[in-house]
Length: 294
Image (cartoon, rainbow, N blue to C red; front, side, top):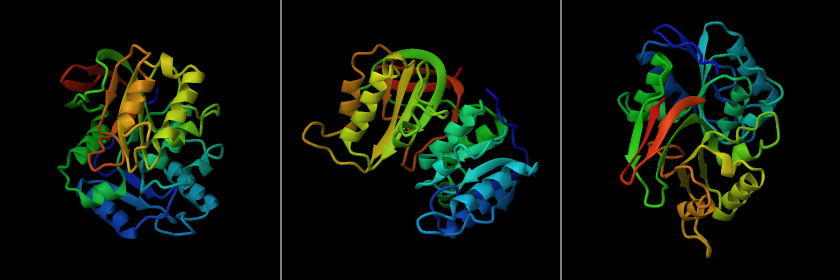
């Protein structure tokens, strides 16, 4: 895969809003955080706008992305927030090798970058840069990737329902509902042989289970190299399952690859960035789970 150019002081980071509208104060805060690290910033024309729930019309949001990609000074694109709307750009945009940063609905754009063989960064957006200090672990890890090009090593306590094992593979994934909507399209990231990362917010357990059945039936689930289950937040249990982790553990029980539940990815303050398409080693032991660059 193509790894975008590393950033150095004086390089430009474009900030745009490809989906929902954002509080302009968060963009201001992100600008200050980036400039404090020596980067120039370029806030695109419609980044702070509002049209219904979107930041702008589909055409205006697309124009902002095209303008950022056509500017040779822009070395990275920070999406201000997710929400909904990034899918509008699929089929209408050809990316180039610059770092794309974001998560949640931005998973649609990660799928676009992946379709062209370009690495990108699944990570926090404007709010985290604006509201958390420079030495926050997620912020530090983001700039490690941008400036040094390496996937940081992570470790966390092994969840009681995780399945132990060690595997090397390409780490890829994001918001499960968004990526499920791209199955059988040119932007389908849910493919066999990968270490798949999944997370989501406000999705009922049965809907996540339905997506996993879809992956079972199309052969993806049994042929993964490994599964990293990030944070599933703002959902309620039901009479079948009180928690998402138990359902996912049951769905993946027939398979032999390692499954790491409770990974630090998703709609939480501790959302650590990872490189989409990076080769990593996932090791799940009885006490500690590690993700290390391969």
